[in-house]
Image 1 (cartoon, rainbow, N blue to C red):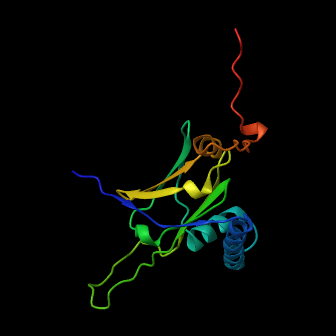
Image 2 (cartoon, rainbow, N blue to C red):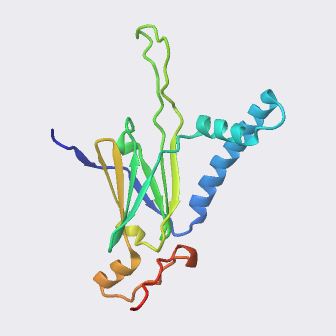
Image 3 (cartoon, rainbow, N blue to C red):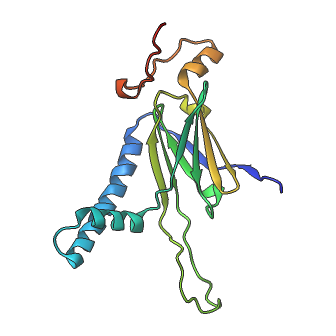
Length: 182
């Protein structure tokens, strides 16, 4: 069985992280509105359940794997049924936003649909990298319904380009523990 690998998506390098923040806030506002509508029907209490129900109606949040190699971060996101060309990746030096909208429709002359569990909610996933990446080096591929995004670490890109390395943005709580001498 051959594996089909294709270049995927449109990559947008954002100089200002405000673009990603604005997209995320817009989605959160839609979820908040829908959660409120749900609460009107259910009554008081159950805020978390209302939020999760609203979120699942408004967006599709796929699971994600973020792996760190010596030179890069590799993000894997299942995106079965999503046309790789419909995927948009917004990136800054410290985060990415992956989104796509694949509506689901039934043909007019189709057989009688007894039930359908397909969702038309857009795929939407935002995550921060543990340290700075070279946003312009981002590569996006799709293989067997899995989206793979490779982001070269900024420090590695600076070394290979011969410029001064970029300082890591790793927070102290996420820093790798120092090895004890001994």
